[in-house]
Amino acid sequence: MSAARRRWTGLGAAAVVTLLVSAAAPAPPTREQVREAEQAGREELAAQRQAAQRAAAAKAEAAKLAGEQERILARLREAELATGTLAARVEQLELRRRQAAARLAARAADFTPLLPVLERLALFPSETMLAVPVPPEQAVRGALVLGGIVRTLEREAAALRAEQAELEALQALVDAELPRLAEAKAAQEQAARALDEQLRETRAEQREAEDDAARAARRAATEAARAEGLKSAIAQLEAERRAAEAQARREAVDAARRRQAGAAAVARERQAALAAPAGPGLAEASSGGGAAAPVSGRLVRGFGDATDSGPSTGLSYRAAPGARVFSPCGGRIVFAGPFRSFGQLVIVDCGGGYHFVLAGFERIDLGVGQLVAAGAPVGVMPGWDPRGGTGQPSLYVELRRSGQAVNPAPFLRGRS
Image (cartoon, rainbow, N blue to C red; front, side, top):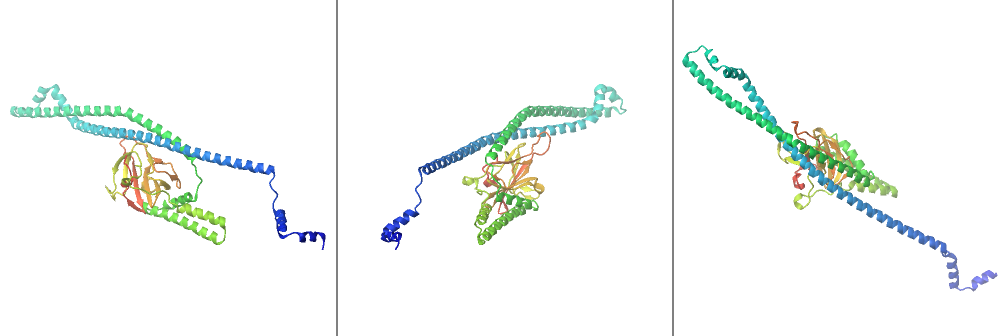
């Protein structure tokens, strides 16, 4: 037996285990390594604090921007209501002025052929009577009839002067309102510019990457534009969304079957994004919830009112010139653009099977796939001149639940 073997053999079992463990154990960290680890820990903690501070600052900034936007929107709505009220007054005065001008023109047209006779009678009454070869009694009767005609003509002339005076008074009222209307429009434009600037800042702060739900919404909108009516368009939008969700589900199952964990996780995330509700749905105003009225204006047609094509399936608002249109609900824009006879049209998927339809825009400010908050501006109504005799533009609002038109009024807190 060698000397080395005799040394191992002479050791007890416990000593052998101790030697083996001590041989396998790593060397204790050096003082330098401990300092580096402590420094790394301090840096990680500082980074976490900075991240938390940045998140808190971003949250505070978002809250500040939201509060500022709320104040700007309130000022804009107030300015739009003032503009709309003055524009409606000018429109009514202008209508009355045109009617007075038409009556004046009609009276003048009736009066004009008699002017030569009246002028001759006024200048040469006796000569005019003597120039007619009739018996005396007929001349007397003629004079009496002529006197009655003169009195009638005098009344017509007085009415003509009254019409002229009313026309001039109405024109003065219109002229007096026009500076106030111009001032209201300037205030509205200033508030609108402030809103646009604030929205650009908010969107820059809250810009999000394009996601699968947004891409699916754009594909669906392209298909829906070919639909014949709103019901089929919304059905097409829902069908495309379900098809995209089913495709993501198939991709997740296929990736899991092939044991591709990364691809399966991505596919599940896409499926979850597509399956997630676009918005929180709707609550009726009577239950304490409800969406805001979509525009500053006056409700001129209610749900079920008679139209040329049957009972109305939505609401119509006469809007202030250039008024902003606000989303009645939070959700996702699933359609934005021209559609059949509706003109520029927006469809907001509110979640829970609800879709708000807004039509009559001059300009749409959001694109398909974008998320929108309740009360956020989505576009602008056309401007109009109340003196021009053209019809005031109107915003058409329709609410669909599972594709069927329902009365939007119970879901709106107010009608401006």
